[in-house]
Every structure is written in C-alpha cells, then in structure tokens.
Figure (cartoon, rainbow, N blue to C red):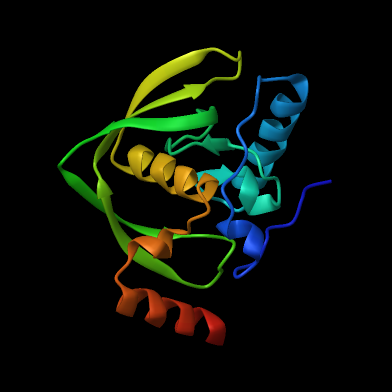
Length: 162
C-alpha cells in the first residue's frame, strides 16, 4: 500500500520534518516506498512530508535512464554556487500548476546514505534543483515559496481553479 499525497494547504506541508537518529530497516522500507511513488508520478524526487511522514528523508533520481536513485536522510546544504539554474518546478501536493524557479546551479550536500554513513556529494543543474526542492519540503516549504509574492499569488489562484 502506498501513502497518498497530502494536498496543499495541508498544514503538515508547512512543518519542519524531524531528523532521524539512524538509518534502520524501517527507513530503508520508507525509501523503497518513496521510490515506487516517485516512479509512478513520474517525478525527479520525493520528500517524506509530501506523503504525510514528518521525517527528514528524501529520494532523488534525475537520470535519463532512471535507476540511479539517491537516498538522503538528514540532508544539509553545505555550500551553494553563485551561478543559478532556472527550472520548471511542480509538486503532486499542488497538482496542475508549475513555475520557473531560480536556484543555485550547484550545491554541496551532506546526508546519511542508505548504509547510514554520513557522506558529502556535489549536485549540479537538475540534480541540484531537485535536491534543494526536497530539502525545502523537509523544511516546511513548497517550491512556490521561492517566488515573488505576486507570482506566488497568481500560481495559487490558478491552482484553486484547476
């Protein structure tokens, strides 16, 4: 059984997710479920709060051929590039709308991997965008929170009509 997506404006989408203490079999099972949900969307990433689990756990796969999923627990951005990358972002939590979001083109992220080891990895372009998008979810933010007040209002108005 897969968990349903929370729909905006569910208050749980605005809460900061709790860190996990260690990667366990339960964490790995949650990651597996999240990969299945992400592939069914299809999408480039999924954070646990999107499906009602308030834990700092996410998955990302921006590869063309798929199957290169990165499992992240307790991710932290260590550094960001000054150079930016703009990408059309969307979320299954607010279906039917998308917006161009400008984010740092490269990020260095520290996280617990599937083995429970703390690793540091560099992400670029779409990968960097997706990782930042998922970390936003873990911090109780949606992609449209990165838009100007006017663009955000227009997007939410359009979504309410969809």
